[in-house]
Image (cartoon, rainbow, N blue to C red; front, side, top):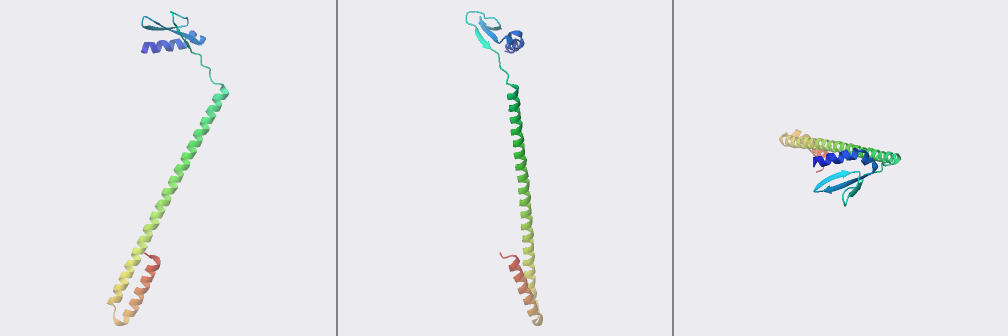
Amino acid sequence: MLKLFSLAFVFLLSPAATAGTIYKCVENGKTSYSDQPCGKNPVALDLRVAPPAPEEAAERLARSKAYLADAEAARADEDARAVRAARVAQRVQRDLQAERKRCDKLRLQTKWAEEDSRRASREAGERERSKARRQAEALAVECPA
């Protein structure tokens, strides 16, 4: 098979190939190629391939480059959008954590204020209950849920 391939390659580079027609001959089970017809039923292979016009090739190349540039720009835009979306998601997550922490702190302060008001003496009790009520109101405003 390699011999056949190399033989065909040699014929493609030979002056017969530039003539345009190569004949494929099969005699006694062996295939040969020639620039002259041989045997009773030669198979003619026309090897002339018209090269594309230079303007057409240049235009095709320019279209390919433009398409590639557009695809690269679209991919870069998509990457930038993904990065921005990830940053926004991180910012939202940080804000939620900060709000949760602030609400937890307010709940704890409310709990402590209520404990202080229960333990306070009669004179200081009213002041501590007022403090606990204000703390609960602040918690209700900051963290409604």
